[in-house]
Length: 113
Length: 111
Image (cartoon, rainbow over all chains, first blue to last red; front, side, top):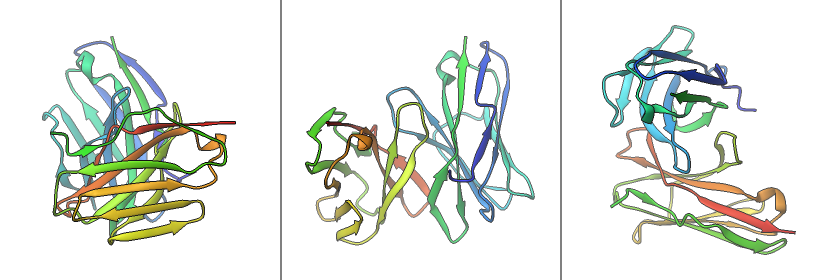
């Protein structure tokens, strides 16, 4: 157990809808990174939040957006869902001085029909 | 060219053998390297981190780094069936805290 919790566990949406995924970081961790993992692939970096500010972004379109709250929990929002957005979405938390030491939550499995 | 490359496997080894997992990366400036283990249907679990050339040992696991060859490997000694999983190599790009993952190598340890 990493102490990183994600909700919901599974989600089914239809194309064009919007979705919000949630993450609570490990106690004391002020940095949250989000990744998308398609079947049979490694996780792909979406973005990272540090102290409520975006601290780097991967090669994802603007319809992927995020937030970090004062308690360091975070949300990932995806608008105008596409079939290719079907994937496991992973949240990872880390401590500010070691942002690259990242511990993953169990993930949210999103299916877009 | 992919930034982090791994052989997808499966790599099949008998119980008790040494499993050797390899990874190459494209960014010569990378400084931080990680190995994660991912069981089917689960999330990645951090096993090892390595930052300097050479070997780093932790129990049955040894990570090896050669920055000149842009190569990092993971050795698992005395492999157990419970080690059967996908092993993901991750490289931090440009000191950006962004981890770039390979596609993973599937390891099967035969009893």
